[in-house]
Length: 453
Image 1 (cartoon, rainbow, N blue to C red):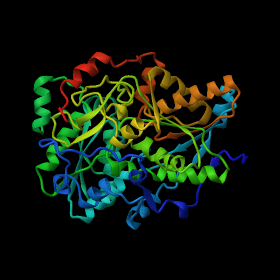
Image 2 (cartoon, one colour):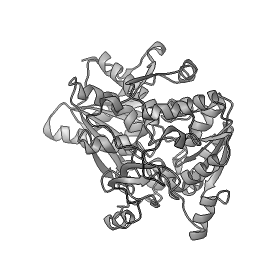
Image 3 (cartoon, rainbow, N blue to C red):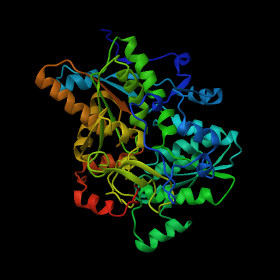
Image 4 (tube, rainbow, N blue to C red):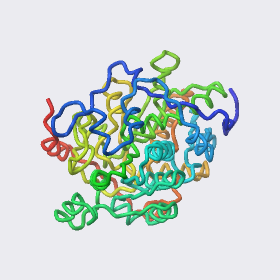
């Protein structure tokens, strides 16, 4: 086995096409439904929000979609990203497991999010859009879209979940450096925001509320479109550059993963890493266990119900079948802001229903404990979101120690935590607490989701 610690690819080896998993699914995913008629939607239903190129990718049955040259030119600013073997962490754990992590924190905004923000901005610019609106939780997506809009001369308006707006002020600063206008959500600028504030003037916000505001703003202006950083099929497809590069890098050192681990909020990072490996698994070329890891405070896969639900709080978006905690879900203000969404990507949810992946939920205290251990061993401070994958990876590595098995583990370190020092300060001061989302709250929420037959 090759003893390299860092596996890098040449710039010429950036994938030239995104992988679309839909043609390879053993069963097709359930259709997206119109919120009024509950009938499958068509392109015209989505045209007020998205450019036709992205609408086409959302329903495409092409296994591969070529990456435009202008997008590749921007990708070259940071891609291909490195694959590391976590040798120092392995030593600290005294485990026979071989741990690899794909590091997306080298992007201009420190996360995996520009992998889809750049093509979304490109396709919108090509079709004459002047401004993009969006929501953001922790700020990674908002800063990524702000960066991408700057590359293609688009305006960018962001509604940031209120608790993250307060906890992570420098994410707002980064968005504004790239030219975005940023609002705390719920705001007084939209009917959706005013409705929520009337009900709860001190609302901490949620991704569902912020989505409602961004969608409303886009729908009211024909020169404006809406951009989503996770959940949708085309978003996960754009992220598959992560998994495609990882396959090449592991092949260079003659490794195949026994376990693939990724954190999940909306599903884009996890889908981007895992979908190319699921393709190989379905083709019989490898057989890894594939595991989603989510917070105990937002457990859509482990406690949510697989059902049709709105993607936003107010009920403006189409209905998608996904694992959901209910569209009016307001999460506990845990520090993994990017994982505080009420639903899971339809494709990830469908794959779980097909038995092609599994899920577990971990509390934030254990996640930060393992993040600090990882940082002291490997020299990278993880964002709060991938700490969940790191905690699960450490659990698996310790199981390998107990059994003596030489397990190969691949995980995604989808971003650095340089903007998250407040969260780490709270952890080091003993101020973090775990929160287990109650089953009764899920049951009550299910009474409010649309009745789809």
